[in-house]
Amino acid sequence: MELEKFLEIRNKLCLQEADVTEGKMMSSPAIHYRGKVFAFFSKHDKMVFKLGKSYPAEQLQVELSEFNPFKNKGPLTGWFELDFGHEDKWEQLATNALELIKQN
Image 1 (cartoon, rainbow, N blue to C red):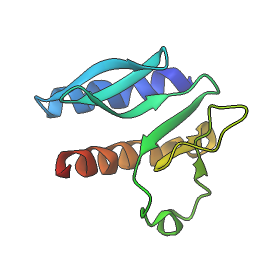
Image 2 (tube, helix red, strand yellow):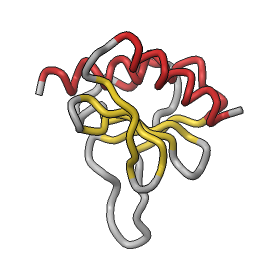
Image 3 (cartoon, helix red, strand yellow):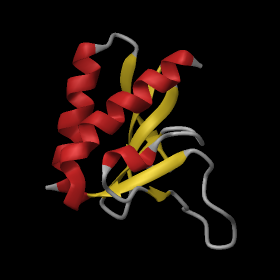
Image 4 (cartoon, one colour):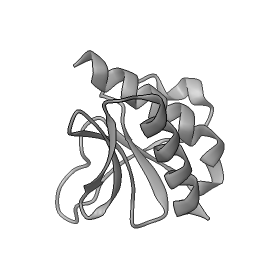
């Protein structure tokens, strides 16, 4: 169910935007914009988004977690994850991440 929701969002964004493509991130399914990853589906059934350090996460009214795939290092700066319990926010966050990557 979780993966299907991610794939639905990815397919929608790929259809809407010519420069958005399917890809991989750490061997997980991802969404790319001009070859750069801005969102992906983690092995822990969460969706991960590149939102930047200054993203106003408190406006979402859900707890975004910093994404940390490492055992002995800190989290990836500017990357956040949200579990399937809040999948209703996934599409908006993916769209936000896409808009941010377009600016850079």
